[in-house]
Length: 403
Ligand SMILES: [Zn+2]
Image 1 (cartoon, rainbow, N blue to C red):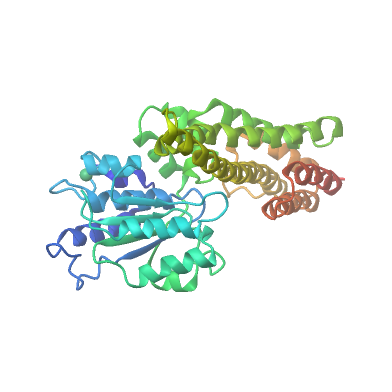
Image 2 (image 1 turned 135 degrees about the horizontal axis):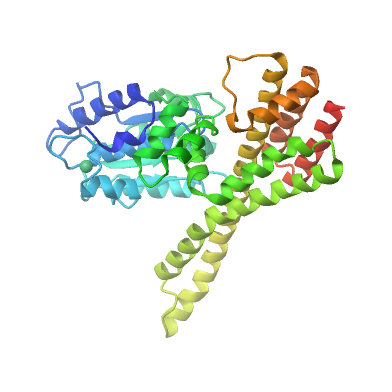
């Protein structure tokens, strides 16, 4: 039967578990939560999995299934509740996301407060924490308090890369049921792309094959010309590495492309947020009240713009990291080809000829050195080294490794 869980590619076990839980949640005590004796459903869930595996998609689909109004299908994907949950506009589904780098204490408090009231239209109050690994100690503790003693009709859905204490507080982890998503294979990614419709089948197959199980990445590659161009720039880099006059400028282009990508992805949100804030604060009217509101709003807008700037910085780093992963993938393919390993699928099947040529030209130890240089660059960017410097140092290190 079709439904919201179609969006989860290659995660049959997870879908079965979440469907069972959402069904259990339907058999509830009037005015209360579900029958506590039914172990299939709990108040707090932790979705983990590698980047692109669909953690937050799983959380949102589960939220839709819990609120779904269809009498038989759990998460029909068609009713008003399913629609509004998936669009992010359901009144009883609250999204908690980082403002800039971290999830702020004041946002956690505000969300908890809103989620403590009775559901207004849905069955439950649901709090989705998209990047629970971005909770600070303070905001994490505030959340923990309510997760430990949740209101009977409130459900918490946390998303984090892993259950590692580096990513998620041990106490929050121990209070939640873990749902581990796996990296989907290319066939599953392709199916997910095609499920949404509007994507050419051949392009869907290509995007699935070159995105290493990262569905979001595959979707961008399938639908966005600029993303495809940026990938071409990255994969051209190894071809010109021997020529410093071409390699360094191309590396610069890579960085500015990542910045542009971050800008393009965030600008519509940024503008909408500012507009909403202005409207909420009554800017645009006339008279004394409006002038005073205007002054207050200016400060609030400034604060918002600061948060947006740090979100863009993070976005740039994320997009650059994906590019570096692509680059490392190319050298990995070259290494495998050089070693004569034939039974491992290449990361970039469409560039197999080029990577094989490179792998035949350089000794494996040199290619390995190039991969290490890329990993070092990723680590440097993660600890806030300026991307332009880090990437340019990486090109120098790769050139040295290849001799
Ligand atoms: Zn529905």
